[in-house]
Each structure stands twice: as structure tokens, then as C-alpha cells.
Length: 421
Image (cartoon, rainbow, N blue to C red; front, side, top):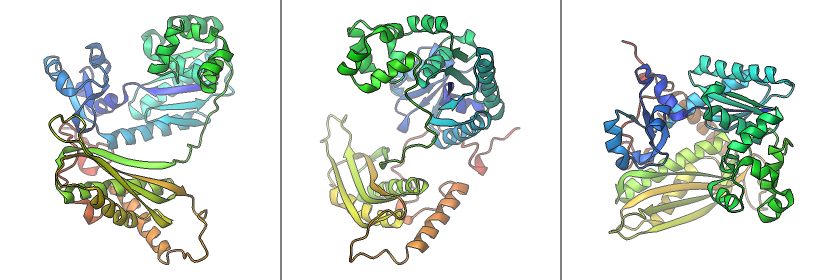
């Protein structure tokens, strides 16, 4: 048996967590540079605000309906997510963190519906008690059925946020009233194709010939159908797959025209990518830097370019990659353009001790000292969040993302702790 635990309206719930005055107030959270709506509270959903709706188009309705607006506060969301996942892990035998607000749990050993339902309610109540975040819990014999059960838990309030799908009659009833597009792994494009074939509901989908699904689409869709029939094809993956590349990029709050500002942004993204690289206990041999203007600026010429370089020896040292990144951005920068976005990609990864030196290569002599320095920097930044950085990253950061409505980082910054007056 599997459970899928999903935080309800996660970003909006995090914003309400330390603001009890907003308990019944509609809340929306905006994307990078305050561009689009990326999260909505249940009250905002009831008012008809859509995911991805541009903020400038929705602003009049937002003001008219007294909606509270927040910029994305990723540091807060990541820390609350960590607390949620650790709480779930304390209750169940094993978990697989699927996304920032979702996790699969292993519930083997629980057999009857009552025991499974009680376990779901225990997970739900414990997470809320320890973190203040409400979750929905879907339970089924496969991960895809657990996902479907979670959809029902969110869709139908009378369930209390916990749905167990083991009874065949109950499964069939749910499948007959659920559109095929709600199935885990069936995206919008695939949903349209299935609908054109007469497959409207989940029940239609599982009745379709398995062989023809595999032949016309893929083995993955065949496995999805088998999972919906109760045959487990996807196991619980407790160890995330090793990344093949790390990308760090952002759109700028204002257009950049100066090389030094663009270089500062690229240096900041390089430092962040290297920090992620070390957290994976990997080294990289290749770096790519890219920049572009806005493709939506009709009256301005469009420019996009990238450049790459390869180290002779893999590294996780920020200083090494900063030197490479600076050379690359100077190579592709052109002064006549107004840049809207830039980024860095690290690739060609190696685990410690797996890189094969050639006959005449030597391992860097000061590597152990540099690793110690980077480890210390990471420890300091983990405690004090970005307080130690390289000078080439800049101090004032005029290119930084617009986050005019960002809330305090209540759980990770001493100077932003909530205050009770």
C-alpha cells in the first residue's frame, strides 16, 4: 500500500502560517519578478483566479476583492517543506519526497480499510500539529491509485482530506466520474489525444486495450493503466536519482545593459549552482553560461547566446567556476542589447574518486584545502543564509528579481522572526 501526502495550497498556506489575521482572507502568490499567479488559497480559487494568470491583468479584481498578494518566498517555503517531510518521515516506515509539497509513503503492513484510514488521519493530524500545514492523504495499492485517491481527497470536502481506495466498487465509482486528464502522468496534450479516441474518464482508460496503448503511445502509459488496475509497476524510490546537470537562472527585475551588472548576476548564479553541486557530493567538469534579451519586447532586437568551457579536472570549487563563468560572459556579451535573463549550467558530473587522470595529469595540489574552505563557507551560509559570498557577486545587486511584496523569512532569519505585540 502507498500513501500520497500533498500539502494543500502550499505556498499560500505558508504565507498564512504566521499571519492568523489572514485565516479567511483570499491569498495569491506571484512568480519570479511578480509576473504571474502561481499559488492561490481556497478563497482565491473560489473567486475565480487562475494559475498562471498575469498579475497586471488580475490586479483590478485583486484590489476589488481585497485579495492579499505575496511575492514568492522560496527560502520560507523550502524550510516549511523540510519540516513537513521530516514530520511525515517520523510517522511512516519510509517516504519518497516527490516535490516540495508532495511525498509518497510506504504503508505496507496495513491491510484493512479502517487501519489505513486511521493511518491517513494520523499523518494528517501530526503534520498539522507539528507544522501548521494542512495536507490531503490518498491511499491505494499502487502509486497511481494513491495519486487518484489524493485527487478525490482534495476534490470532495466530505472525505475530510483522507481517501482510501481499496474497495472495488468505490474505485469504479471514482473512476467513472473523474476525467482522464486527472491521472498521474497524463498531461494536457496526452489527455486531448485520449479524448479524441473516446477515452473521457479514468474508467474508459482502464477499459481500453492495453497492447494498443503501448503500441500507440508508450510503455509508460501502459504501466499507468496497469497501476490503475491495481498492479504495482512503480516502487518507492527512497534515494533520489543523481542529477545529470544543475541549472541556475533568473529573469532580472530590470533590464541589464552594463557588463559588470551582468557579470555579477552570472557570478551569483554560479555560486548557487556550485553550492547545489557540493550538496550532491559531486564535482563537475563543464560549465555553460547563457544570456538573452526579452523575446516579448517587440520594439527591441532579440539576442540570445551561450558559451561553454571544460575543466581539465572536475571541481566543486566556486572560485574555479567563477573564473570560467567570467570569461564566458565576457565572450558572449554585446553592449547594444538590454538583457532580461542569464543563467549557468554545470554538467559532466563525477563522484569522488571516479575521474580517470591521463598519464601526464596531476591532481590539484591544494584540492583538500579548497574543499575545506568551501565546506566552511557552506556551513556558515547554512547557519546565516548567504552572509558569506565572493566579491564579484556584487553587493547592491540592481539586477535582482523584483519581489516587492515578499514576506519575512520567519523560520530561517533571526532578524525576521515573527513578533507578538
